[in-house]
Length: 237
Image (tube, rainbow, N blue to C red):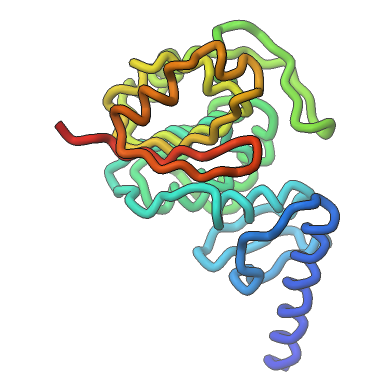
């Protein structure tokens, strides 16, 4: 029975990867063998690190971001993490097992995120249903699947909501990064940020942001098609 179960699990995992690649048109950059279970008819999916996620059509985002999107190898158990664009928890969930506290900013998939936090029994995650912006109310959408009207807040306001001290910033908010005042990043030890040069309000609205990060943090860049990730470690002075 054990052998039969392992064969079934192996086939399910590889079929799932194949379906994800075909349906979403992406090249998988994760190892299907790291998934313990999880086709769409299964209620939840458990990864090897113990993180549990409710099975949804957006599960590929979890695989994509957790396995190859960000570097969190130097997270500390004393860190306060600000996760802007937490989605369903692909970074929030596993990171909460490593850091002191996570503040998860998510305007659209708030309920899915809450459910995943509940499934993992996490008590060190604070979810804030808002968006990074200039303080105006906006209509946001994720492709065509979900839309919502949401209040935006400046980066400084969000940091103040988190107790005014952030050690580790992960930011993936589809252009919202251009609303960040560069000096408001001062004091943050680590930054993992996905940059969207052509998404509103575009890089032209805040051309000094990336240069400021590169000049004040030891920074690596990972190209992701039309976007790229910045992996930045604060330069000790």
